[in-house]
Image (cartoon, rainbow, N blue to C red; front, side):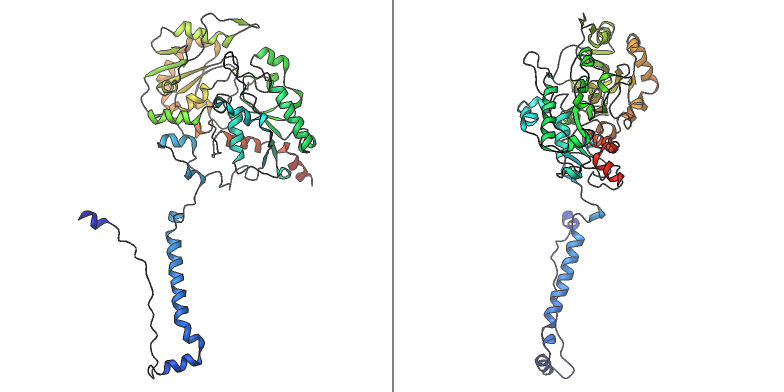
Length: 461
C-alpha cells in the first residue's frame, strides 16, 4: 500500500476535443456558412492541430534531460569510475574543456603531423610502449588527436606536434628503453616533414613541438656525462621540447625552449589501487621506498648511481622500524605507497622519478631528495606546500626531519596534497580533461604563442 501511495502516476498524455456550437439561428445555418466559407469549414481541424502541436512541443522541451536544472551536457559525463575519490583525480569539478569561455588558450590550434607508422604506432606492438614511465610521448599524441585544439588545416595552426616515439625500443638484455636510435629517427622525421610541408622551413622549427620523456631529455642519453658531451642535436635547438628533465641551474640538456612535464603513470593502475584503498584511508607505514639501492655502489664514468644517496638510505635506515625499505621489484608496490605517510623520491641517474607522480596520486607526501630539481608544472602545482625537500647532504638526518614534519605541519601538507586538482595536473589521460597533464601542456604552449609563425604574421599586419 505504501508503494502505491508514493508511486508517481503514469503520464497518460492528453488530447483536445473541440465542438463547434451552432449559431443563434440553429444548426441549419452552419451548412450554409460552410458552403460560403472554406476557412470556416476547416477551422476546427486547424485549431486542433495547432493546439496539439503546441502542447506536445511544450512537453518535449520541459522534459528534455539536458534542460533539467538548466545544466549543459559535458563530454566528461560519459566517463564513469567506481569511486568518487578516484573520479576526482581525472575529472574536473568545474567546466569541461569544451566550454572554453574564459580559458587562456581558447583560440589555440595545434596541427599533428600524420607520420608513417614507423615513427610512432609501429612501436605500440609492444604493450609497454604506452604504459611505461616514458610513455607521455604516446599519451600526449593520443590526447591531442581528440582534443578541441586539434586542427586539420595546418595553415590555421599555431603549433605543430611531431609524434615520434623514441622511448619504446626496449633492450633485449635488461628490458630498459634504449634510445641510441632517437637522434636519427627524429632527424628522419624532420627531413620528411620539411620535404612534404612548408611549415618547418618557414619558422625554422620554432613552432614545432617534440617530446623527450627520458633521463636527460633532449640530449637523448641515459648517462649525464655522455648527454652533456653530446648536447642537444642542432636540428632541435630552435624547437619546443616537452621533457621530464629539468634543473634550476644551467645545464646543456635544457638549453632549448622547454616545458618540464611529469613522467607517465598509468591512470588505470592508480584507479585500481584507490578503489581498494582510498587516499584518506589508514597509513601504517611511516616512510617508504622500494627501488634500486646499491650496497656497494659502482663508479661508472666517474659517477656513482644516485650520487650514493640511495646507498646511504639503505645503510642508515634499513634497520630502522620507522622505514620500510625494499630493494627488489614488486608489481603491486602502489598498494604500499597508499599505506605510507612519507614516500622517498631520491634521484637516480637523473634527478626526476615516477615516484613523484605516484606519491602525489596516491596521497603519500613525496620526500624529494634531488638537489636543484625543476619540478613539473611548478607554476601551478604548489610543490612547496605538498612535499618535503631534503638536501642530498642531509640524508643522514632524514629521520629527524620527517619526525619534525609529522609533529608540526603534516596535516596541512596532506590537506593540500589531497586536493583533487593536484594529482589531476600530473596525470595523462587518453583524452584531454580540464586541468590534467596534457591540458597543462596546452596551457604552457599558449604562453609561448609568440613563437608561432601564424601569430607573428597576424600581429605584423
